[in-house]
Image (cartoon, rainbow, N blue to C red; front, side, top):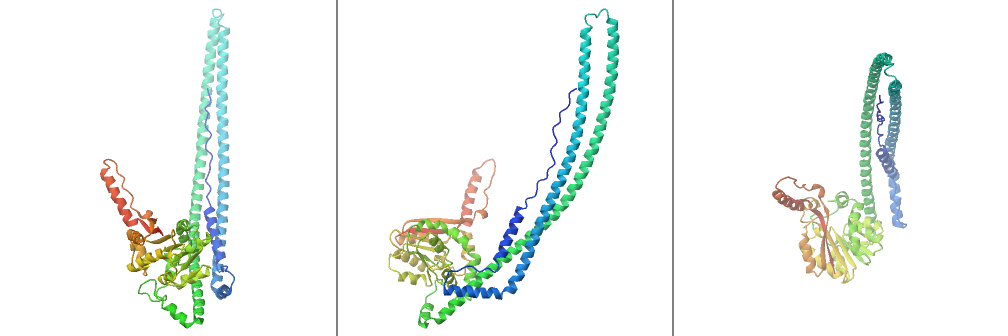
Length: 498
């Protein structure tokens, strides 16, 4: 009888929970708390020193506001760290319990293996008896006739003995197997009951921990929103400080010069007369996107200005492209009419003048610029001023210089209905082919249209259908045209060369 070989049962394992996202959120919250109330460094100088002094005074005066924030955020972060330690402790306890259960299962498996070995030994003993029987048959084969009766008697006795022995062994084996099955069923029942209890207990604990983690994440999200709101308020306070110093400086300047500046016609021909009617700086900060995002988008234009000098950024806004040019050691200057944007650029140490774009361009010598860049400006002009702007850009740039006009894509319904009409200072969108034709009429060469920011996530998916695909293909072709019209690229840049 051969022993039945059984495969080793699988080990009991529970995948440990990954607490690294929670630790990462705690680290972000600690870093955000550390930055509350910090003052950014500035270049030396009387103007910046005065700004730093005002900021320090404001920070000291706002201690009643920032100290409770520090206490609250510190308490939340310590609570998060305590929760993370409790989670790690529970995870270790679970692993220890799993290891204990695994060792008990291994012990039961050892007992089963011992029983299997006993059965194998019985099989070997039976095999030995069969060998001895064959040996007796071979020894008495020569004298079979003489000892036939004795051999028959011995054979009968042996058969009787073997039958009795086989019967006894079968009874013992049946009894042993029955006992083993009863014990195994009892052990399995106990194990299943214990595992069920443990799973239920761990399930409740994990559910409680999940609720705690969800609550913590909600708290962290609330803290993040509070930090973003604090940072936005800080940027607006910085803007107000720059305004205060700028107004103070203008109050001490020549009255004749002030009258000359105030007589400059506005760049945006809208009904908004003063900044107090519409805070364009805060509007741009919310809907234009943060400066890091704009710099990332405008990096693709840097290759056109490599090795150039005296590049002009018209309507430079917060100075993102001027900073990119400065990082590449490209000499550049900006012109900006908005006071808040102009003061922010000056604070960054950028070369910017506050003037109307037509007045400034007309004051420059012809063919004096090594390149011109203008992002999201031309849609603020009337049709006649748009054509005048393109012609003036050609006159003021040197031969071989690049000129880039970036604006909203008038071929995309989403871009026009959402982005163009969102800004109350927008006057007229410019169709890509119209701007290209205007640049060709002004004698620009090698004009290309570069589209950007497609609305891929909003597009309608194509239809998949088996069978006759001719109608489906035609439907999908028309659907692609509809997606291009509704959710195509939001912006484009017309790039030409003098």
